[in-house]
Amino acid sequence: MWDYTDKVLEFFYNPKNQGVLEDTGEAGVKLAVGEVGSIACGDALRLHLKVDEDTNKILDARFQTFGCTSAIASSEALVELVKGKTVDEALNISNKDIAEFLGGLPQEKMHCSVMGQEALEAAISNYKGIPIAAHDEDDEGAIICTCFGITEPKIKRIVKENKLTTAEEVTNFIKAGGGCGTCLATIDDIIIENQRNSHFTAQETSSNGNTNGKISEKPLTPVQKIALIQKVLDEEIRPILIADGGDVELYDVEGDTVKVTLQGACGSCSSSLATLKNAIEAKLKERISDNITVESVSS
Image (cartoon, rainbow, N blue to C red; front, side):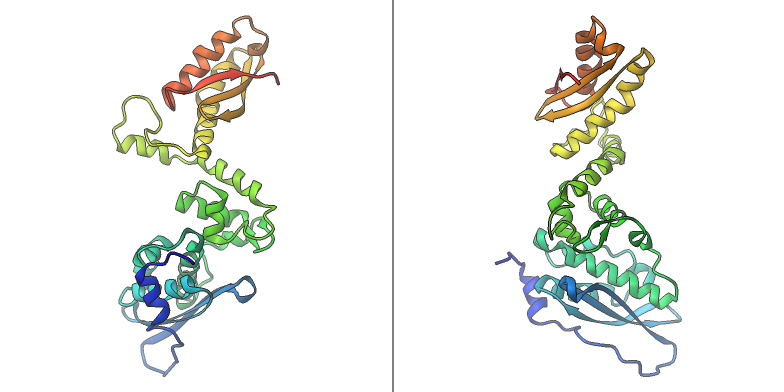
């Protein structure tokens, strides 16, 4: 049985906002509907908003949900969060806000809070009479998870917004990889790419006043460590080696042991050991961890 909070169970057993908002012809009031998910995939949510057109304030909201305990509770929480807010204020509500309002959700059920956020965006776009613009790029990329029809742009967005570090977390948030599992390796690649390209570690360094040269003093997951090692190699080490006719390529990471292949002039140079220790290992120790050792393997 899932470990649900008391608030999740309360909202599941006694939802107060379940149902439909009917158009009564009230002047200055507009109804809007946002719908996400699919019954075929196991979860679907239709969100109804009643909005004052003069103030853009959400006067009332209702939901219709097909899904599990977390889906119903997340929908109820969403309605409670949006009531009384303007539509623009409501747009700032994230899936994290929904989960926190419930006192937390099991990681395996975080996709229910994501569904709530997306239904809200769809309803507000419907109210404004514009296409869903917030994440319309989600539908334009290659489909990575064919079981649930999840595209590469959507996976990238969810990974970045929630700082996900494992394919399992991605499955928990948007179900991608939860079917046949053949896309899990691709999801891992997307996570590594995000870690490599993002600058959040550098921003953390600046805000923490870190002056010892390390990119991050926080414990790193294996994926984060690989991404940072690759980043330092690409941006701080390889340009120097390439200028001298050599190069280096990351081969593998086992704990604190970094295995690389020396290429070009570096591979055939008599001072390759010095390059390995003084240029590569020293820089990785300086920027990532004092525990790192670097070994050369044959290409």
